[in-house]
Length: 250
Image (cartoon, rainbow, N blue to C red; front, side, top):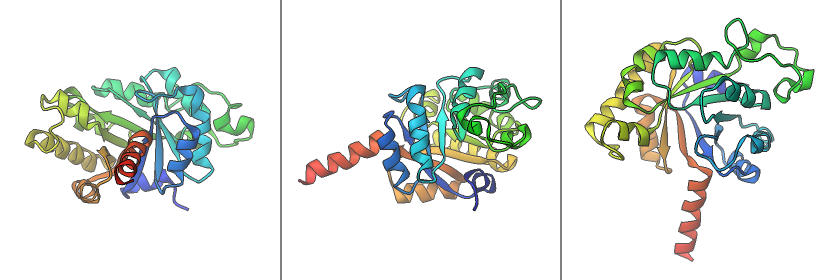
């Protein structure tokens, strides 16, 4: 069976959603909904690391990998969510190649990185996991956000850094950094998307983006532009949309 990591590295389109309610049950509902991956948001979401294991288990119960966006790129934060069983890590607010190189190193055991070595944690089956460090390193999905003008200006250099699997556009932050907040159809923003997609294509890695609310036309357009690792809203936004529709129609 093809893994998520293999699909991402092969350029196969995948679709996920963010989890920001900190709810195990909401995570399970999303896992049952057909998404290819889920991503727990520790940067903006309501739950903290103490709620992470339940959400990871909810995804695992239905064969859906769960990634985590850490609140910062600190080594201890990345290492901890990996030890808890996260499938991969999304790093927010990185702007330079040096920032990205340092962050990506936190995902790998030495000598390729500086992740702390601990074999008796949940991710390593409390000591039963017999994979060697290289095999573990190769199993981690690495996502770096492009959400500032500085990051955009460095995107070609960031894309070729070893260990980066996905560059993920944060549309709201990037448009604000460009001086056109929320203007996602503006030529300047569309040019930025093209630049990210081109950099990823050249580096043979995946481009991703927060699509926003469900929209089949928009979803296909993004794939056509080269964005293959795309998020559709979040548990809270999808719940609000469905609840609002139900209340209006009742």
